[in-house]
Length: 470
Image (cartoon, rainbow, N blue to C red):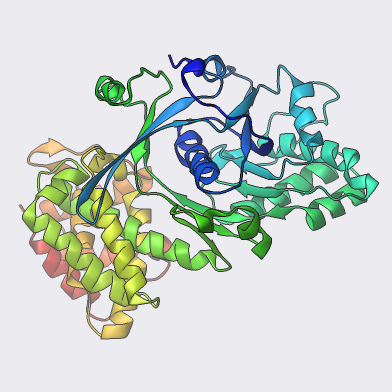
C-alpha cells in the first residue's frame, strides 16, 4: 500500500466532480488532470463520487486518493514506459452514505467540471421519486439532484455558477443524451421551469469521444513495476500510452481546460462526427479486418497478427490502400492516425485476443468495413481486395470451425444459425458457394441494402470465399 507521507500531495481546490473511480477514469482522466496540473496553472483537485451503493473505494480512501498508473506503448518504433503516482484526487465521496458531503460540493464556487463514466447503460431514465433522503439510483438523477442544489445555492441569487459537463460514456452524442435525460428527471420531479432554463443556459453538456486501452491491475507485471517505482500499490492500473480525448463544446471549454498548453492528445472541435468516423473506419475497421483472417490463419492475438509478416502486410494494405483512400479527410491526418493504430497493435504489453474482439462480428462489419468497401467502389469503380478477403473470412468464420475444432461464435443467435445453415447446405451439396454468397449478401436487414446490387460483389466475394474452402 502507498504511504501518503512518502509523496508530495499538493492541496488543490476542488474543480472537478467525477462520477466513478474505476480503472479507466483513473488511468485516463485523472492521469490527464495530473499532467495538466504539472504543466499548466490549472491547479485542479478532483472529488470522486461513488456512483453505486456497493462499496466505498476503501483502498483509495486509505491511500488518500493516491494510486499508480503504468503506461506502455510504442511511438514511431520506440518503446515508451510512463510511471506516475497520481496526486490530483482530494476527496472520495460515497453519496449513499454521506448525502451531505455530496451536496456540499455543489456549494463550491470553484467547482466547474463534471466528468462521468458510468458505462453505456449509465445514462438512462427510470421513474423514481425525488428522495428527501438518500440517493436516487440512476446517475442522471444524482446529477439532477446535485445541479438543483447548486441552482438553489447560487442560481436564484443571480450568480450563474453553471458547470461544464464531460460525460465519457461510450454512446453517440453522450453530452446531449445526458442533458436530455437530466431534464426528463427535472420534469418528472416537478422541478421549476427556472431550474430547467438555468440548466440549459448556464451549463454546457459536451459530446466527447475517448480512446485508450486500460487493462487494469497487471498481476503478471506488478512485481516488476513495483521494482521500477520503489513501492507496491494495490491500486496500480496499467494501460497503453496512446490516448485521445475529443471534446465538442463551446470555445470557453478549451480556454478553461488548457490542454492545448500540454503535449496531451486532447482535441477541441465542432465536428465530433468526423473524428468518430475516422476512429470507426480506421481503428475499428483494422480490428474487424484481422479478427477472422488472423484467427483462420491460426493466430490468437493482435500481437500474433503484427508479428506475422504476411498478416502485417495484409493489414497495412487494407489501411493504406483501401480504407484511407475511401475517406474524404486530409490524407496526412489519416496516415498519421493509421500509423498510431499500427503502433498500438504492436504494443507488447497489451495481449488482445482476437476472439475477445469477435463479439457481434457481423454488425461490426456493417459499421466498420462495409462503408469503406462501398465508398472505395464508388470512387475507384473496383472492389478493395483486402476488405473482400476480410469479408470472405468473416463468412467462413461463421461456419463455426477451425482445423476440426469448433469456434465459440458470439453473435445474435439468428445470425449464427442462418450462416451455419448456409454452410451446411454447401457442404451437403444442396447449394453452391455462389448461392451462399448471394443469400448472405441479400440480407438487407443486416447490411441495410441488398449487397448483390453492388457491381461485381457477388462474383468477387464468391472467388474470395473459394480460397477458404477446406
